[in-house]
Length: 64
Image 1 (tube, rainbow, N blue to C red):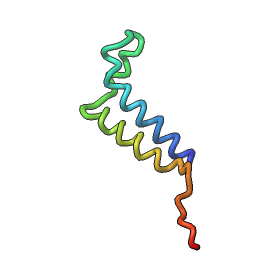
Image 2 (cartoon, rainbow, N blue to C red; image 1 turned 90 degrees about the horizontal axis):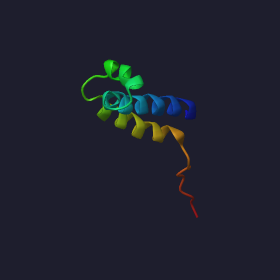
Image 3 (spheres, one colour; image 1 turned 60 degrees about the horizontal axis):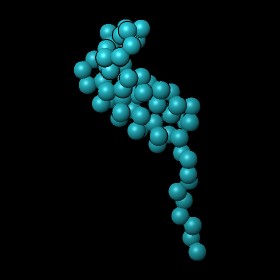
């Protein structure tokens, strides 16, 4: 699941950066050609959901 989380995080990060590439370095402006409206919002959602797949801590409640 951690690998799937990393892949989803990378895709989400790409989706957040891609629409903003039109404003930056001229070598990266090709990235903006592949973006669609609302892509940055979906990218942020993907990155947030991917953090759930990393499972850094086990939330089991111990019974006494």
